[in-house]
Length: 564
Ligand SMILES: Cc1cc2nc3c(=O)[nH]c(=O)nc-3n(C[C@H](O)[C@H](O)[C@H](O)COP(=O)(O)OP(=O)(O)OC[C@H]3O[C@@H](n4cnc5c(N)ncnc54)[C@H](O)[C@@H]3O)c2cc1C
Image (cartoon, rainbow, N blue to C red; front, side, top):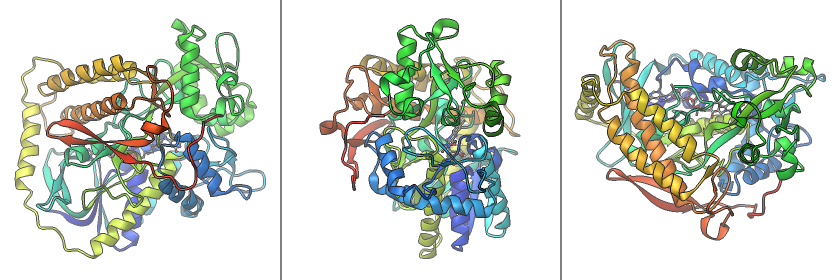
């Protein structure tokens, strides 16, 4: 059985940064990913990464903007860690070889982003995630002697020892179908978010909440699951993202009357208010009949006000996306967008070193909830979150590993159980519903009932439907009965992970009887600090979600009314 000091599940930015940090501390590291690491979803990140690196800036200002963006639900100790360590991390990236955009003076250029009080987003055109991920992967190759890469391995469950600590995982080699148990002194979950729970979403097909569900099933608490971010600018048909960098460069949002409607809800920041505020403002325009395009379900994003040369240089990827997916040349005409699911603020509850309440189990990146984003994440703070808390988790896990022996664990029973479960899926009779049908219904349900606006009736109805989908998923059938690259069977497992994520999201949304950040309850339209300035934690109790609360950490910024 392979054994490592630190086993990292996920090879996006959080996972790779954790691996580098743990390897530099001298640990033996394994990094596992269900796809080739540079196909991890971090590669899609576009607009940039925040850090107070300008001489006029200060990390306290970045931290305050983040606290305000979170609608005061973010934990301020964690936000202070993230923002104070951001400049050093971005410089470290540059020293490793990330070719950040430079201004005419040769300094690192910074662009404006939503909810920020000044320009503080470093970027590589609109392919920042790709640039970062490839540089980290290069670095990882240098550590090939201490970092074992398990590329195209799919984790099915976490291993726990008799004392309840996490001591490894079970995984399937996607190429051959072989199952294997891995022992580890520490496991870091870096499995990304759960965007595919919604349809449409800006997230790729692989973003299915695996890490969240595996941790939940192993007994770890989830936190802030009700907080789901809708990004203001997604293509109407497909949900593909048009980066906030477009508004950062000066693009306008217009309704069917040609009005810059953001003046009504955010007269100071206009299009660069925080995402929850802009998405709600757009949805109100659409709901009140001032939308554009077929059915009036869209809003115009007008990039033509940005100088064409600048658009072609700094936003070249969305120029291509506009042409390829909407048939629109954004340098010459407005493009139709609308709010779309983009990010989950919630996830596996951790401390600032990535530790979950389960000994030996860490989480970092979008799978985790530290919570630095609280009710609403600021654009360009996620890449930062992945790197800061990825690094901290790697360092902490390596230090912990140095002081302990390799756990002795008999994983045979769990290995057999997971292998049998896969065989059972493959052998299901072809009646009942297909996995893909259930997934579609789930995504459309969540997009209708747990979106920008929510209410009790819609959420309760969603919970009932999720219970039915859960039952149907237990017997849903697939086509592929082979072992080599059987993505079908992995899709069935991913569906079960997504159902856990959907259920906990809806349970959290029902529980929070107020409006804060991304959660807007039409039946409770006000923020209510007296009762709801607290996190909602959800654990698995038998086979049902159980709710409890934990306090929000406030260090220097008392809650106040949020105005942009
Ligand atoms: C279109 C788009 C643009 C964005 N732009 C920005 C931006 O400009 N700035 C910003 O700050 N944020 C941005 N974000 C958000 C940000 O990109 C993500 O939150 C972040 O990259 C997540 O990184 P991660 O390392 O946590 O997860 P991911 O990059 O999603 O990696 C997850 C890893 O886990 C692995 N994995 C998952 N399940 C399993 C399993 N069962 N077994 C084995 N491996 C598994 C995957 O293979 C993958 O390697 C954007 C997001 C999208 C969708």
